[in-house]
Length: 116
Length: 116
DNA sequence: CCTCTCTTTCGACAATCATCGTACAACCGT
DNA sequence: ACGGTTGTACGATGATTGTCGAAAGAGAGG
Image (cartoon, rainbow over all chains, first blue to last red; front, side):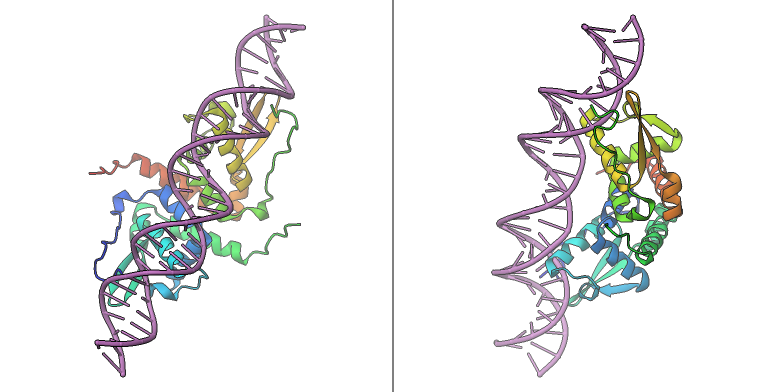
């Protein structure tokens, strides 16, 4: 429904990006997967992310990431394209995004700790 | 009430520390303040942190940080001493804690964005 | 014009969370 | 032994969260 501008997309200015909001946004596995995917591919459409949630849930996660200043979304025809705000994040919080994604991918590769 | 060992303190093993749990733990301003304080002072008693919450709330935040693997607590007489698990965090997620705390303190020093 | 695809909005739900007050247990002086 | 200090446990409460399904709008293609 919200192609053109049914609703203006909220993107915080770089000076308004709050680190704690970013951390909260990245503390969810689905959203961290989205960010990791965007680090590999610079721009993707909404429906093309390797996550297993309902479309409306995905919309919710994109909104959290967008309002935290982590991603930017633009509309194009029927699609909504998403990019990482990597330049803004690096300017405001140098090294943070890289350290986090690298650490998370290292954790994924590590042997999963047995619960028992 | 829980001095000696009314309840055994849960400290995850280094291999069990989950980055997303750490990010969630650090995404709260009170808990981030606790961590910043511990970076300056290596060990502090519970009641000596510059945060303005009720004692029971503070206990809750310590538990979140402890179970995420961010802090370690030991009991000594009437006090519970708290330290940052900086070595474990650095070994598991190199550079992450430093990048986060540095970024947050930079944000605090930056001019606060006017809401209007 | 009709239909299909893409993505959103809305409402609902259960779960988690941050917060507090009260009660209380353990320790430490005196 | 007693009172003060320290910090926890418990229960409650209101807010936020992640999830989904249903409905619907906008665009694309026939």
